[in-house]
Length: 216
Image (tube, rainbow, N blue to C red; front, side, top):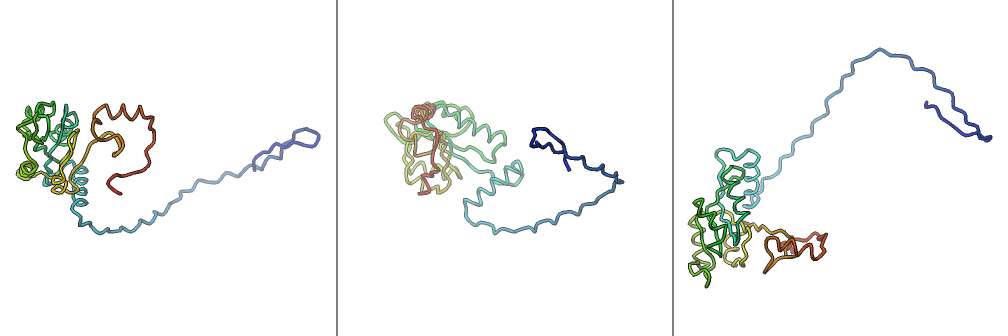
């Protein structure tokens, strides 16, 4: 019982009587039974290629790219300085990702990303063919090149051209796009690099409703 302070009708304060002192008991050793362990649940393994690829990538990351794990082959698409490409390439060389960059695709053969690729022995493919890039390849030639290089995944790391339908069909669920906004908001022509962030700040946007452009 705790000592309580109560107000009387006359405004005086009085305390409740203190509880009797507890008797000291000898210490006892108490043993606790171990909690029953939950039964393991075995989940059915997914047969979807994309799910199996993700699971393999997760296992490779958890094991630090164990010996025997198949390294994925990446083609990175860029149009500018290639800061994302450099980070991806360095991560591959450093063993942080279980993959190899086997090609860089660009619409600007003189961009920083292309120069970095050439300096590190990564093949450069110019796509599409245009007046400013007469050495560019056609869509069919691009697909043939990617197949010859046995590309597993395509990473769009600041590539400013539209991706042809044929490429999407040839690599279903195997194309990843790096873009600093939740598309389709703040995307399209002119939205790249810091311009995306400036547009977001200028708009006053602070909250995006949960939306997935590929789930509708």
